[in-house]
Amino acid sequence: MASPRLETFCCPNRDSATEFVVTFQPVLFGSLSLGSAALSVLFAVLQILPKRKGYRRLGQYPLPRPASSSRILFIISICDILGCSGIIVRSSVWLGLPSIIDQISVANNTDVWPEVFCVGSAMWIQLFFSASFWWTFCYAVDVFLVVKTSAGISTIILYHMITWGLAVLLCVEGVAMLYYPSISDCEQGLQHAIPHYVTTYAPMLLVLIANPVFFSQTVSAVTSLLKRRQGIYTENERQLANEIKIRFFKIMLVFFICWVPNIINESLLFYLEMQTDINDISFRNIRNAALITWFIMGILNPMQAFLNTLAFHGWTGFDVDLSLQQRRELAWDSGSTSAPNAASHNPMVGTTLLYQSHVQEAKKNMMGNGQHHSDAISVLSEGNWRLIQIISYFGG
Image 1: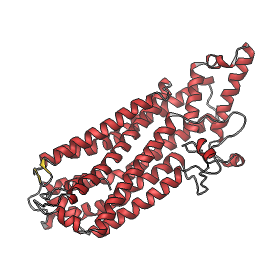
Image 2 (image 1 turned 180 degrees about the horizontal axis):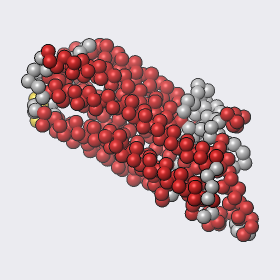
Image 3 (image 1 turned 135 degrees about the vertical axis):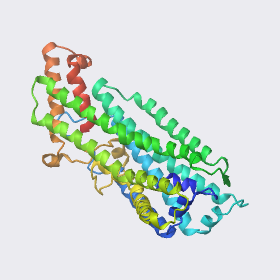
Image 4 (image 1 turned 180 degrees about the vertical axis):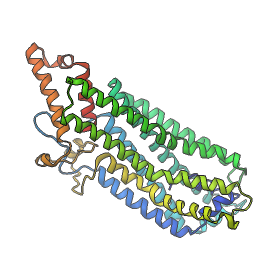
């Protein structure tokens, strides 16, 4: 799981609240985290592998493969998988070599490798899950920009600079402040640890607060654009708007399920940490709640990798195809495994037909005006062209 408490645990003179949760049934907790992360990675990789049915191509004018959307969603999945891989390695080592945990707890220990592994694995997990948070935020920004300004794939470079730059900067800064003046002798005090926890939870809270706002504004803008198109709101257009709402809802639902327990657990542990004696009988219910949410975190945090792929693409099936030709045609989106002969059962058919109607309308306009293919974009009104971009973004 991804919790700053595991980085705090690397300090021999850790606080009592961290000691309480990390040392409670470590074998059971490690086993649950290992099993959850392994299953999540297995199914997440299975989800994003190319399938024999290939990319959906319905009719004469198939949906184009979305550009920035597919790349961002793929990067989020890779970050989740790498974060889960760190959980697998750390849990495996802690279960197979329990003496490492004992050596971490020894002050002034001459063997530095247990602490190096503890800090390195914790930073690896935090870095990639933090990057996943930043990319999730960038996805919300990107869909909003596509709807409002028709942003293109060139913004991907800017997203890379923002996400990886902030993820590395906050991770290094938080760890440096936590382990000052040294790992073996961390400075104690709640005020000293707060900056580390802020840098860990800042991107998480940003997604929880900002993404619903961006998603809501995007849905409103898409609905308004669809209604302005010809003054009517057809069933296909209503279906497109509903599909966008459902995708956004699933993304936020997965995020809430996987990460809200972290915020609850951290609040409980901070409360315990401020007490003079956390073992007092009056804090029994709070201690139990902290332990329950701690184990829930150990299970749900790694599951984000698999649950995110379900939210992004739906269930893509087991029919994996690793041929080179299929790999070139791979598209990372919700309809990527729909077969042509299953079009009647595909909820995205309405979106495809809506897209085809725009393309056919553009072709008629081109023929009527005698223009060449290179002038196709100029024939489309700004609203229609932006709508085609939106349909390809969400319907691919």
